[in-house]
Image 1 (spheres, rainbow, N blue to C red):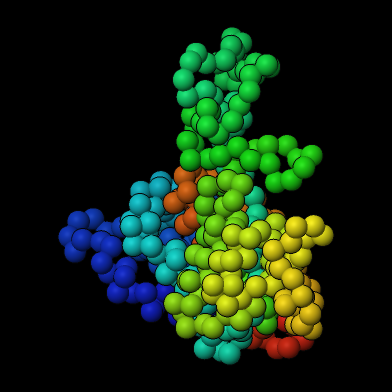
Image 2 (tube, rainbow, N blue to C red):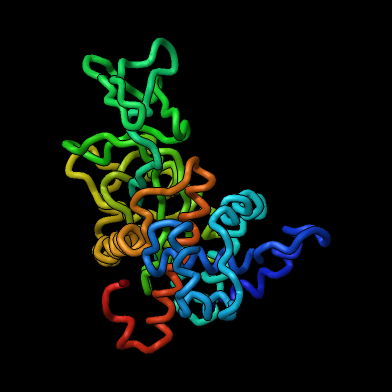
Length: 335
């Protein structure tokens, strides 16, 4: 399935490299290597390149013979800008979604949406004031202790010196604040396949702001959304208004000051939608535990978004393999 999707993207890859110069690692091979990193929970690109020296399974998947030398980890770094410029991660994800649609596995009417916190590749020690002197540190040059006592820190006055695009956020009451990004998943309800996955800066309204973007994107693919299941965090007047403007809403109702009423909750499909939307948590569980996306390895929204599309593609491939293998294989959890 990965080979078929990449073959359809061959014209895109042809435009990524000049016809002259020293031959480089094909982008198809880099993308397939990124899928392997997610599928086999490899901790880093450098560790993958080391394993590629002796792992015959990886070489078979990448169409490399036994004598061909493994490529260097810096190849990923040097080619990442080209992949970003041509939106190759999104293109590969879309091709896999298209393949699932060709098999009749997608719902084009019923969807679920949710967001998840992705830890940034930056320490809280790097979160320093944009103006004024830096906080006092000790004499340890390798890992200095930083004293932030008595200092009020917020995203308006502070920024990370390691990743300025990361934002300080806590997911809920009683949770610690972390430098993070937010991942937003749109899942179809028939088989729990991802229809889209985007990464944004972590703000208090980012999950709700992503809803129109995700819905408009799925409409561009030819789908006709009728229901969109979501948790209570999406039950605000602005978010529900955006959904109703697109003729969808199945938000879980808050106990007080809810933006939805009996027009939505009276239908039997409302309870079904709220039950099925919980599957998106299984998607996040796979992406974080198996795919290694609990904490990003990259700096910035763009690079983290590229990694998110590749991990999401790996999830869809695993799910598709089970679905196409037979109905018995598709009844278990998506792991």
